[in-house]
Image 1 (cartoon, rainbow, N blue to C red):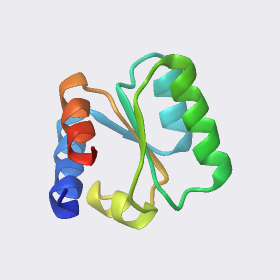
Image 2: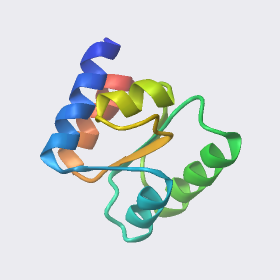
Image 3: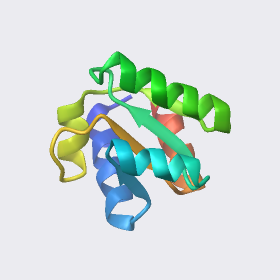
Image 4: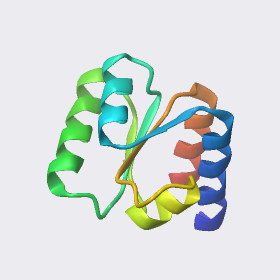
Length: 100
């Protein structure tokens, strides 16, 4: 898998309006049932990783722990970001296939 393509695709998802970022925003999206996939940075705190993994399992949402906060944040035009939620089913499938 090519990380450059992966991070570029995250930027495309952000521009399409189908990506939420940040701890609180992502938590709300998951609770509302809008999240189709969650990406948590490998260097996110263990508490953040555990919280979002457990939320995803409880809500039957696919999740991946991949990348680092700096790369994820810069790919979507933000500061370092620990967690993002993809809100589009098809785009989430593309991301999952890229990372598997």
